Each structure stands twice: as C-alpha cells, then as structure tokens.
Image (cartoon, one colour):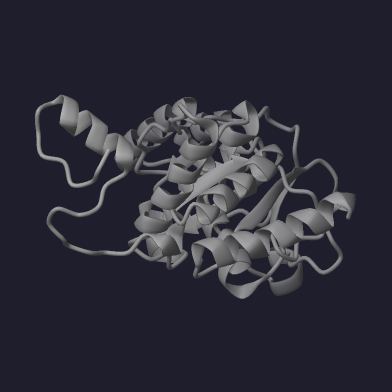
Amino acid sequence: MGELEKINKYSLEIEGLLRLKTPPIGVKFIKSEDEIPEHAIRPKRDKGIHLAQCQAFAMSRREGETVAILKEDQYCWAPLVAYGLASPDVIDASMDDAPDSMKGILKWTRELADALPSLPTGEYIGIISAPLSTAQFIPDVILIYFNNGQLRSALMALKFARGEYHVESDIEPFDSCVYSVVPVFLNGNYRVTFPDPGEYERALTDEDKVILSMPVKRLDEFIDALRQVERMGQGYTGLKKWMQPDFKRPEFYEIIFKNAGLDVNSKI
C-alpha cells in the first residue's frame, strides 16, 4: 500500500472510530503551482471570488472540495502574513494611506502580526486543503474538527498509548487558521485550537467544535492509539453515561481503598 493510499484509508477509520460529523482535512504548503492537483478549486481564477482561509477549510471539510488558496485568493490578513504570502511590513505601509481614525487598529494589527507564529516571507506561494480520505497529495498537517467528547477520547487514546503525554496548547481566541496549522508545521507536535470568531461567522463552524491538529508523521501513532483504546472498550463509543452508586471499579481502586481503611466492593 502506498503512503497516500494509507493516509486516505486511515482517515476513513478515524471517522468511524470517533463518529466524526465531518472528515479530517489535510493541508499542505506549496512552493509551486505544479503541486496543485488539477481538480483543485482556484477561487479567483475559477470563480472570480476570494475566500478567507477558514472558508476554504470549511469547503474541504463539509463539501469535499480540494481548494488552493494563493496570495490572490486570500481574503484575511492573518494567514496572508503568517503563511508568508506577504510581509507584515505591508501593515506599516498601510498606515500611510489610512485615516487617523484607523491608525490605532492598524497599530494593534501589527502587534498581533508580530506575535503570530509565521513562515518566512516568500518561501511558499499558498496552501491547499482537501478531505484527508480523498486527498491526492501528502499533507503537511492534518486538522480534525471534534466535539468535546470526541476530543477527550482522542487525547485519552494518546495518553493510554504513550503513557505520560500531554498535548500542550496556549489558548488563543483569534486566528485559528494560523494557530491550528503553522505551529504544528514548525514544531511537529499535536495542538488544540478553538475556532475563532471569523471561523464561526464566515465559515459557519458550529459552536461546539474544537480543532486537533497533528503533523502527518504522527498519523500512524494516532491511529494506533485509537485502535488500542477501542480494543480496551474505552473508545469514543465505549464511554456511556450512567449513574450508579457503589459501581464496579478496577481492581487497583479496591487495593488503594483497602489500604486507606475504606470500604471495598470486590474480593481481593
């Protein structure tokens, strides 16, 4: 089985194990238009429109489209700068043309730009996204949109499979198209990101969604972890709500409680 075929199949397995509403998506930074699949949508060229990056991700996630966003397609300043499609200096230059009433917001925008995790200006010409199950390219980063219960199960699977393991993420309310992709691309770690206000308003992302990102090199590890907890009966569908006093506990609980001088419910 080739690498791309394996990635496509793993995506379908993840969708089933976690009962996802929408498929994982794969994203890839590109240096040449030759890397864009022939069937990909080029918003400005093909439709005469522009898209914010979160809208392109939503088209891949909900409509099954492969979307290529280059500089001329981009309609949001944060990915324009953070993906290296334009220098953050364009914000400073814009102050010369702005009325005094707008200079404050442009100054604040520049401060935000300086804090963004960013790629070198000019290294990439754009980014492509597609459903992971049908992608015709090897992605750099995989994004999965979860509800809270699905995310918990995914993180629990990683902890069971890897022992003492924590997904560390700073909490940021803005620029989810940047924070869900660029840090993961740069550092190779998992990351949890909340969809930002623009993604909610313009990409129609549900309020209960949260994003888990991973580099593609972590995919084998991730699917193995999900399979492991599924076999243990502790996967997403194995956890069911129930309320019962004196419930049956794992044996190690009983040992701890016995040594604490407390009641136990099983014979040990």
